[in-house]
Amino acid sequence: MSLLRCLIALLLVTALIACSASSENGEPARAGEPEGGRAGEEPAGPPAPPPEPARPAADVSEVPEEDVHEAAQACNRFAVDLYGQVKGKEGNLFFSPYSIHQALGMTMIGAAGETRKQLRKALHLDGDAGNRLLSLAALNVDLLDASSKEGLELSVANALWGQSGYTFRQDFLEGAEGYFGAPLETVDFSGAPEKAVQRINAWVARHTRNRIRKLLRRQHIQDLTRLILTNAVYFKGFWKEAFKEKRTRTGDFHLAGGGTAKVPLMRQSGSFRVAGGDGARSLVLPYRGGRLAMIIILPGEGEDLASIEEALTPERVASWATGGSRSDTDVTLPRFEMTCSFDLKGALSRLGLADVFRSERADFSGMTDNPKGLYVTGAVHKAFVKVNEKGTEAAAATAMPMAECEPRRFRVDRPFLFAIQDRETGAILFLGRCLDPRQP
Image (cartoon, rainbow, N blue to C red):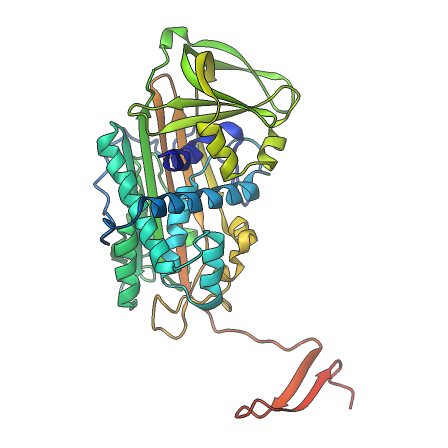
């Protein structure tokens, strides 16, 4: 399934085509530091096997394979769109577009009106929303099944964290479990915010084998926080042909800004798929089982990485994954590890989701009957990747806190138009404007 290979490859390939350890708000995250992240914090302990994630409850046995492929392609389109928004950050960059797409997909279940339209467009889930969500559920099941069949570890977990005593619509809760396998866990954001944060972070850590720690901070919880949607993705795969550690040597890595850095360079020779064209060369490194692979895109001679990023499309990624031919190749690849953190509120707003984050515009009336409604107050994401001679380990998590909307404000303090209308017939009886209330 080439599209599914492309989907997982997008989770990994971003590490190699540009990688930033800076967040959306400019706070640096240091490559290679433990996921907790700062000096003085307790380092991550040894990875523990993650719990079995809850599978989507919906029956996906009749979902056509082409619909599953289309769901993967929707995720890939979103991946490229989001990459375009975050690629301007300095330094390394690594994230899981699949994790973020999952979290946003859960919000779409309870969205209505213009908010729902924006989500469907940004997530590339056009057409019948129910069918698209069912296809996402089928994709999730397919990926979870791959873990047991392909000799690798791949886990996708979702959960809802709701304020104790707050009432959510039953169809929203059923949709979250049906399409995303996301059960509702109750916490007390109002009375015990620290405990709620600790509990959610513990869930994330368990589902990422302790690679993503302290996803949420106390400041992510507001007085009116009523719901947090979370996703966690974990992947561990061994190369189909491992690099021999004895062949790893320190060598020069040529930096984008000029100069070189001494880094450990792994080497192996074998038959690999290599493609070239459009100013870039690509290499496919398969994992055991053959279904998943890492795609490496290298700018051609005289080309810079920025030009490749500008031309990045799902179709080009697919061509890099399946194009070219197998040939005897001597591969040299740096060994690396990095952790990246993001506040994605700005990036997602620029993708057309501005209303989602606006108390006065968001429409999530499908989540609750509470007349005040809910809106998304943030989008927090962290990702980890480690590439060595044996293979690759990657993890990511996304959290989207949602708060009760504040009373809507309408402050008339600048020139305005006004009309007097018969609301029964719609007839406008008077129409005018006010530029200066002081003038008669």
